[in-house]
Length: 191
Length: 191
Image (cartoon, rainbow over all chains, first blue to last red):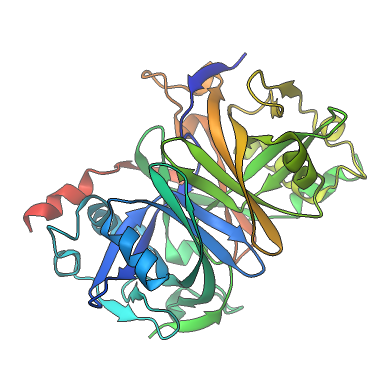
């Protein structure tokens, strides 16, 4: 018998991403978001939701572009900071030491120090209530050579991302490699 | 200098969720999805994207409801199976031994054996290409007492969910508790 917990955002796991944008003067901003996820394979699209009061909200509306930057556990304190500090009161780049690099594909900056970034062109804006969901078409993924495997693709353990648990408001590291998806399940086909 | 990897869905981490639906005859179906995320706090909403060819796609369109069921590492083989097997050819409930329980709030079944489930009412359908994104308002979250902490809220380590790495097509466990979000970052306010 399950216990009702009420209507709440208790999905696990959720990502921790840093969203990069430019304002109308070309000044870069970054903020952390956990309400997001991949939402289409072809074309590749990612969704991220922001509150209207965030400076990044207007930046995405105006520039029609954003980046998703995947922080590592080593960057957790800085990523936490850019999620709670407002660009109106703090110079987030000066404080964190992060460097904004202009994307050559969309009008948004990515973070040089992050090992994996996605450059996104805004394709849908859906006002849901407190949050507005921005869907971006991923026009390129870029990564540091150091986090790529022998096949040239990103390796999670080298990127060392972390995850957020909404009911606990806690961050967790990613753990053990459990093996290849779309494989274990095949053994049940003959059952 | 970052290396371009092309336009691809290389976001980390992504969730592994099992989506529960009913067809027009009231027959339950479940399928696994990794393209999803929370997308609004008020009202609480979750997004999940499915391909049009999946039986669950028509079920959500017709019933305007679905559930999100969070599998544990112990349920990984079964969750992998319900992601690759089609309801057209396999009886997923018989094979996995999972039990469909009708939600008392929406016309969708949740999985009795899963410790945390979200009951969702369809509020938006966004056709993105290969995938269609379904946004559901979470009308209730339900959990087994055994996974709740002293404060009555779900504890990630007790649920023991896992995550998917798109570039590697691998599953990973969740690891170490890294502490409270919205706290570490405050130390940078005085910097």
